[in-house]
Image 1 (tube, rainbow, N blue to C red):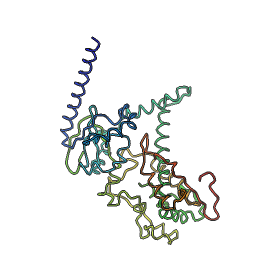
Image 2: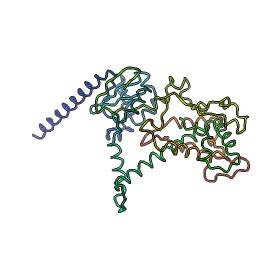
Image 3: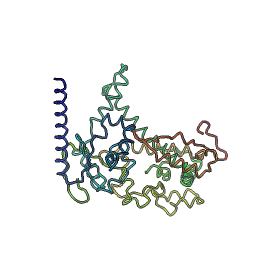
Image 4: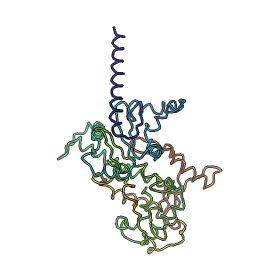
Length: 382
């Protein structure tokens, strides 16, 4: 009796799964976009927890049976960059038994999504979950708030902490590793810092518009002219990583970290390090990329309200650190400086993704901060 019940429940589950997959495929085919199938959703709790154990096993399967994990694990967009869009097209549909996701890397279509805020709304359930997590961690609090509920207040604190500090802090961490691995770029940035400060008593906020080299360090639907139908309740993801690294927008060296690409002047080359003077940097202008090819702070009605704060914060910290000091990786025994720099850059290539992107093993590279002549040593930062 019990076994018959289990057998019946299993048949119902299989039938429900088959019906859901069939419905998803039927709706997706109406869009006339390329379709990629996966057996499980990327944010399925079981799959998220089991990835470290199961990914190596699935990827070792023969005949390409594990290929679906390429675009179905945490952080895959960072690792794949524009690869799937080159193999398929600038827009393709990813289907699992219960979800549909449209990945976009077409610049015009992305701009259209940003403009049509009522048609493409943010998944508010994700924000509700974030607030619930934050609130549950503060259940013992008896504080009251005027205008905001306790849940709203704690939820906003959670978002402000993650979006307002974690993102910029991460950018600074990655930037310092990159600068340590590229001493010529570090010298290019320090040259501007020396020139702009020049014994000035002004605050960093007042000097911010002139710190173009520092800012360059962070700068990191109609699709292709045709109209496509997007089924209702389809998650639309603008593949910003693909757009920000695609060679058709950024040239053959799109994956090379070259901050000078963001500066337009006759002195934008890192080879002119001997040239100094405030007038030189006053001539520098921030290069403006083609519309729709660069939006790290989102765009349109969804643009990040803290964009300028984030930029000023980044420039303030970076210019303060590099104004009187030089940073470089500490060499291991028998390792020369060039090998240490290559090891530093290799750490940046081994990244993981949780709530945000992070380096898997940053402690394998120790940083040395060397003061310039007459500067105070940064005790404790070695």
